[in-house]
Amino acid sequence: MQPAILLAADPATATLDSGNTAWILASAALVLLMTPGLAFFYGGMVRAKNVLNMLMMNFICLAVVGVLWAFYGFSWSFGATRWGGLIGSSANFYGLGNPDVLGSLWGFGPIYKIGSTLPAGIATAGAGVPVLVFAMFQLMFAMITPALISGAIADRVKFWGWTLFVGIWVTVVYFPVANWVFGTGWILNKLRAEDFAGGTAVHINAGAAALALVFVLGKRVGWRRDPMKPHNVPFVLLGASLLWFGWFGFNAGSEGGADGVAGLAFTTTTVATCAATLGWLLVEQLRDGKPTTVGAASGAVAGLVAITPACAFVSPLGGMAIGFIAGILCALAVGLKYRFGFDDALDVVGVHLVGGLTGTILIGFFGFDHGALAGGVESKRGLFYGGGLKLLEVQVVAALSVLAYSFVVTFIIGTALKKLGVFRVSEEVEITGLDESEHAESAYSFSTVLSGGLSHLTGSTSEPSESKSSELSGKGV
Image (cartoon, rainbow, N blue to C red):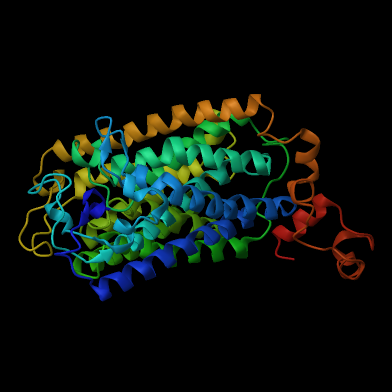
């Protein structure tokens, strides 16, 4: 997401580009759609007694992060650098209501010039997009990142404890990391790592945080003993489809304008996701003997995750290679939780952490010169294109730095909340289900009419038990 290091353009010399502005507004709406899409993706994979809680854990991220972003999040993420590039802060960005913000345009420059020919903080004649439009586009990234974490700790977290965690986490983890990767911070402007749309700041960041929380909270009651199959597989595929649709705004919108680079990002996003789906299903066929619907949906998401940092730095063939590799690696990685004994409920670590690492690091191999798209300005080359090991080294440093910071700080936050008794639900509540205990609602009403209609399956005309309900829901009833 290269335009992030650029300061607001001088209103006296910048001019509004309505076409680019319309594209960024549409992209922002597409990215916003991804969080409800993620809610369906995760909601279908949990048991029937917890589906509303899962939907709410995602939905509350929109509310909490939106408020904090307006107050100080945008300033901390994209303001002038402070403390040697560790955080940003600009007074006119706080509150998003300063006249300088309302009337300024954001000067997007060609992505290939950044880090090679221009020093950090120099605005170029560019897309002519209002600062508030850019702020709203970036807000959608901030919203979905903590929502990604929720799948790892499904079925066992208090709703208000999770809400408190989201507010703390985006403040001390996401906003600083976003500044490092997208803004005026050290990963983009000193290390010069390449991350076009958030492989580090979003996916590695969320995946590392998810890993920390599963260690803090421990396993679910009955994990590896009781069946915990997805209760609504169509929800899973619907959610994955919405994510794929919204991801075009996520990746192609990160160019900051409607141009050839956005078209390249759109293309690689498409072909990488297709290849990743095939890679995941191939693993399932060889390992389990059957390709599954959940596997297809998960493979698509793995491909989307992996291509995110690389989408404008690789060719379409390179994008397909990254997607295919990620589909295979992520399909294999989801089994690590059983080998190492951590209860990552919905495979956030296997898909987002592993997928994010894969895409970020593989730029060091598949990155190539986009001079024709970039007006003749050379971009960084990876190992396979004669660039040597330099780019690979910086990509590894960026990925591991974000991973380590997110894991350590999240572990501290999670431990503190757990010790305060506000994070994990009781064993009794967990067995009963979080929908009833946390929200006083039920996603599905098993009436006497429905019970009678299911009598040939349940062997009884009475209301089906929770275990029977979950089993029947998993079969699409």
